[in-house]
Amino acid sequence: MEHLSRVPKDRIAVLIGKSGKTKKKMERALGGKLTIDSQTGDVSIYWEDEPDPVRRMKAPDVITAIARGFSPERAIQLVDDDVFLRMYDIREWVGRQPNQTRRMRSRLIGTNGRIRTLLEEMSSCEIAVYGSTVSVIGDNDGLSLATPAIEGILGGSEHGTVLFGLEQDKRRQRLRSKNLETFRDKSSVQSDSFENMVPGFQEARMRASIVLEEGESVTFEEE
Image 1: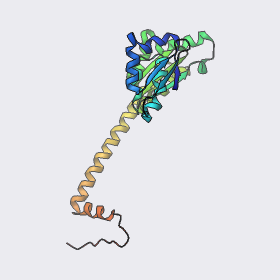
Image 2 (image 1 turned 180 degrees about the horizontal axis):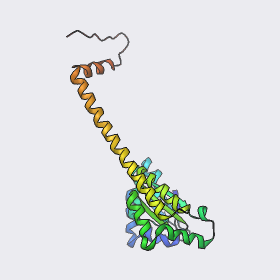
Image 3 (image 1 turned 30 degrees about the vertical axis):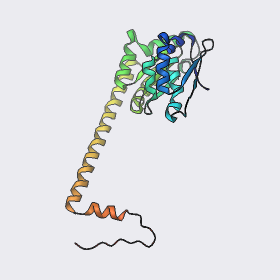
Image 4 (image 1 turned 90 degrees about the vertical axis):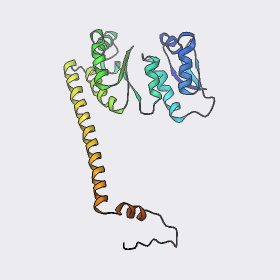
C-alpha cells in the first residue's frame, strides 16, 4: 500500500463519485486499487502488478488535483507524461489573514469567473481556486504562459497589465514556434538539395558511420 495524498472531507465524495464510478475510473487510469479513509481523507493505492513508472509518479498529483478543486475529468489529464500540476499557496503571497485570502481568491477568479476563464483560454491551461490555493494543470508551453500571469495577480498587478503581458508572451511563443518550423523546413530542403548536387553523398556518409570489427576494412572505388 502506497500513500498518495490527503483529500479534504468535502472532496471525498467527488473522488468516489456516484456508486463509486469515479473511483473505479481513477483505478483504471492509474492501474491500481484506491483506498480512501473517510475519516482522515488519506488516499492510498495498492499496485496489483509492477506499476507503470510514469503512472506511479503521477498518481499523487492526480489525487492532489482533485483535492484542490479540479474535477476528476480534468485531474486525470495528469496521467499523461507531458502534463503537469503547479500549485500556489495564496497565504505565502498575502499573509494568513482570512480576509486577505478571500480578496485574492476573488481577484484570481474575477466577476462571474471571467478572469480565470481568460487565463485558461489564453494559456490553454486548467485553473482551480480552492481554499487557500490556486492550482494549474497544463503542458510546459501552457504553464510557461500561465505562471507569470498568476504570479502577477498574486503579486498585486492589475488585471489589465497581467492580461496584456500574457497576450505578449503568447505572441512571442507562437513566433518562436513558427520560426522553429521554418528552420526545420529549410534544413530539410537544404539536405535534399545537397544530396542532388553530390550524388551518393548520403550513401557515403552512411558507410563512413559503420563501426568496423577488428581486422575489417571498407574500400571505396571510383565510379
